[in-house]
Image (cartoon, rainbow, N blue to C red; front, side, top):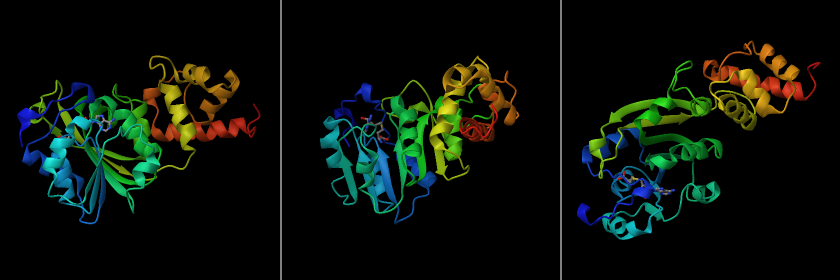
Length: 274
Ligand code: SAH
């Protein structure tokens, strides 16, 4: 492939992989089966798309940059189970994406870094059809996704993601493996989606976001500011869940946030005397 002829567009987070060993490692990490259906985000030059296609039933790959059309079609000319869609994956309605698949599907991607978090949230919150997500992301972001409670990396995205599934870092990848070379190292992260907690997802998400809104403020102050409940009701919620009002969001476990969500509904439905 003529790498020199590619005009890399920095604005779209284009850092491509041409190294066969790394491409094979991603496929082996993803644990692909012959009859799997796969969604890729960011086709690039199609190097990862090609190897995914060779190892599964069907791959659908979204690419925002139409200037890559020629190189993609050249690279995939012998592949007949890959469909490339030149659209913004973040803006695309999830129903349109999923119309391409017969069954539940997996996601494999060397993600454009500038939209990592919204892309992950889209596929964990807007659908229940995703089995696993295996993605290359910035190392710092990967560490945030697997952070433990009470560490400085523990944030709202950590809590949200671990509510929806199990998250692991499978390997670190040196920045030298990408063309052009980015200014940060990367890691391959795998998210296995499974239902672990029973509670209202929308409210859970609101409470987690509210709690982390101002990191240095107490859980009491954050909830008071963002939940639209009286001081008494917030204190009652915290007491029911055995959480001290002066705790900070990073000291609460996922179970704590699930309890808070349930207690919120009890309080607004007047089951509580406050
Ligand atoms: N998978 C390729 C490319 C990775 S770089 C490889 O590993 O070599 C990320 C790719 O995502 C770029 O090609 C970029 O143009 C594309 N991209 C960026 N934002 C996008 C979006 N919103 N929707 C779809 N593709 C996007």
